[in-house]
Image (cartoon, rainbow, N blue to C red):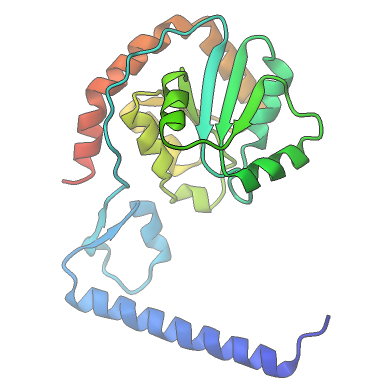
Length: 240
């Protein structure tokens, strides 16, 4: 299908006008704003014009919850909540858990119904130890209560180097240790605050880590308790 020259001209003109107003808006911020809040400071290198000293990191918020600390059973329960389509790529996590830990680990994914359908299409033979649901409210709270650890093991991309997942703070607010991928902002945050583990993004690295976690799963409750104690400090620091 050919694109008409007039359509190309209109698109170019709209892009030029939008870009002009965008840069004018940044100029106004730079002149009159004392502080410009961004989800992460890594994001600021993509924002021109504004003086770097004006930027202040302000991560998403979350409501701290007091859940009873779960004792891991024979099967380690991992939990992921969020998108699974597009740049929300968790296929490696599913693949490794499905192929290597069928008897030892169960992964529950809570996502939109449309994403759930797409995910099943990508895996014609879906792992028996991976379940996909589309819950919210009380049912979502039950998933958190039944989880030993939460996952943000996603494919590292340029976007992931500055993106701040809201679910990361929801995980911590629920007292769940987080398994995050290296090469992402979330992975660096998890390592800095000791609220989980930063794991290199490869099938070998993930398999090795999960084997070690299974050997030491008795320590997960004390890890979760430590996260609950430090959660107020983690959430307080981002507002100062």
